[in-house]
Image 1 (cartoon, helix red, strand yellow):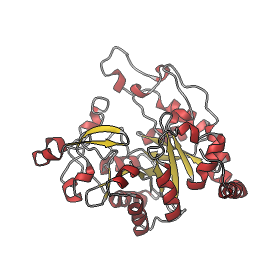
Image 2: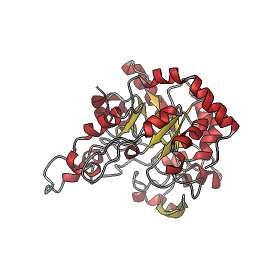
Image 3: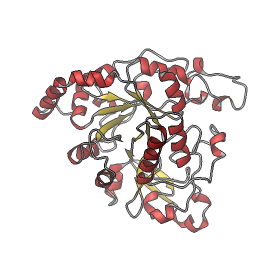
Length: 356
């Protein structure tokens, strides 16, 4: 990590100047982000999932964005779409199956960058975790893949219908990889923000990314709010040898605040858990707030599979035990008690209920 530059010190000083306003913002009710929509109940990144999230009270709906061969940004968790669409059963696309190196990992499947938008639109979405979410898998084959513009249209329609402002929370996936194959995504997204009248710091949008360089480039191109995503392990794909842990120290967060408005940590970085129980909250939220960053951890899921033993419900001998729902409300309440400014959940209705 580099030392604080003069610009960083100036930015930190300015952040301090506006801390009263920041405190007011952080005293507001935490926002609920429908993670890939209501992805616990409907196939992720579909109109079905996004509409369900809005119905349950989500403030934002989240599309992960990856490009098509002809440069459109579509909502898929990964550019590999074999597990979330019916592409593997489509004989006309059998020859598109490939093996690629994405952020250092060898992945075999079908990739959005090998399809035009028109071809992508012929596919239908599938549940990514059918063993854990069979009720969601019942909706397989019913929904198309969406562009970012279509996700924004769903949010705006939901705003009109509910009287609440529903925002979008796009994530740029693997931007360094896509730049390496001639499909850079930062400028494409900025162009969309401008065309959709979202290119401002007050627009109902947050742009998130796990990489540092793309966020720095975005900071120079858009005033829209930016969020640096971090995980408990590993590091940014564009900074080999750098760990996320190195970037979220009290000092490091002040540098993050130069190019981001918020931090999106893995939830266990805020409220750790061991196999048995939740553990006391860390100082991450306090340190991020001190740097002027809002904090939106990810991702709260309801299934026993994702919960520590003391929060699981049901009979462990039941073959469906891990798919049954446990006490996710306890996780959400612990995150809210830690002072977070929002939370990602596959079950936004639970996050709204826990927020009270």
